[in-house]
Image (cartoon, rainbow, N blue to C red; front, top):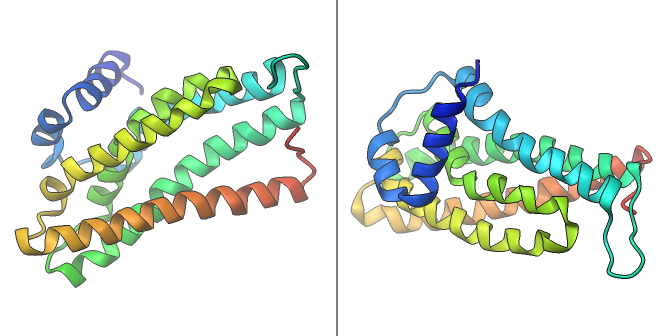
Length: 197
């Protein structure tokens, strides 16, 4: 069950006061299924629906609008599946890497870390309803990396001397996973006949 009031309050906290947010949620224990359904799913639906409307109905271009339902479905599936795969694969990598840096991070905590960090990207996904504005999602992506940085130590409990290396490796993996997932999913969708224009 999605608690809208809780969702809005939590999103506002993460976006406006990430340090305060991690101080509050860093040690929270989550139920993975409940967290994915009550927090991740509703936020992922923002770029999913906006992408379908933006690329499928409104279109891209100043003078001649280019849009198609196929393109809309392509972008919507990319946004939805890509988000979940991105969270799971990135979290799994952070979870598995932990012992190499002298700490232990449960998969649930890693999922929490990555998902909350993705919050600005998912919220900014509403901009894809006008595809020409989707470039501003890059700013949200940069802010997401900042939130990941702020929450890294509270969630991973990594030591001071190892936190920089662990964070840098995790950061590279999160970015790489996002790029690779998008490329692979895009190729699969093209093979399935969903055009990108």
